[in-house]
View 1 (cartoon, rainbow, N blue to C red):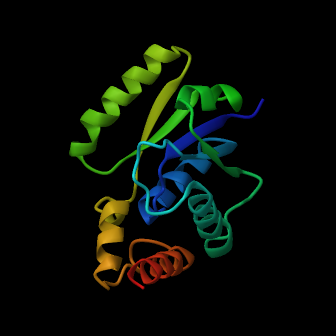
View 2: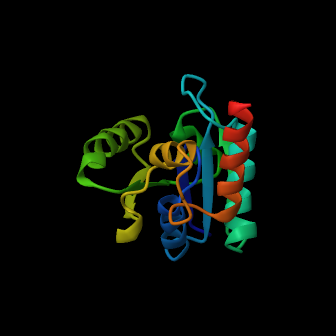
Length: 168
């Protein structure tokens, strides 16, 4: 039986921090389901469809990761329901700094209360990527800064196109 992990997030946009977590998880699990959240209460820069396309391009075109081991899906349910759909009992979460821990700890506890068969595993991105957040990447590109150290080439292209469109 293959071991499947769910990696949920907004990925608005995907960064090298997210990618570090995915690469590390591939060493531990047979398959990773990257769940792109589509909860309507959030204010996304990119639509769910755009974010899925951006994640797919980043992982499979830019980085040439194995399509057989990673599946990118949209979801608007509880993460525990996504786990049930893909027969997984593991949720992956990335940690950047101590400031992330309190929120992530509470989230893991709530998921555990919803389904006590599900474990949350925290993975840290590499040290050089721990400062990266999607919010900062969007702010830097919006102000015409260089984000090559923070995300992939195709993601940068998508961000530039989105901001060019928004300003015209």
